Length: 102
Image 1 (spheres, rainbow, N blue to C red):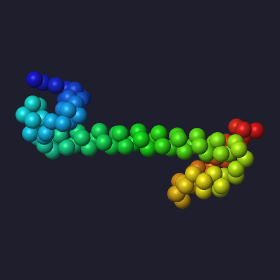
Image 2: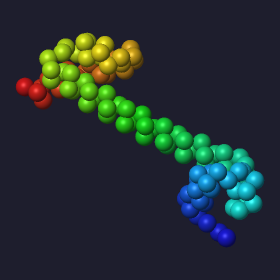
Image 3: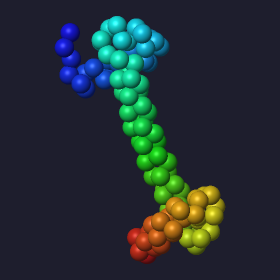
């Protein structure tokens, strides 16, 4: 059974979701455990990246709501518990929202 790379990855992930072990998957698709592991790690990284984007959008949304209530950018960053590296970027975003609100 010859499958395209995308199709094989999709089917491997389906098997993982069905709690099949690596040996079963290896025998079904004739691939190495290293390749299975690579597919799983790639999917995990993709999922983690999507979750990070959702979290970032959620923070910006919360920041916007707080800013609309009259809180200053520093107070918004502190209230949301945004860490130092992201705080500078967040303050810039919140400050630029001022133009939208007015």
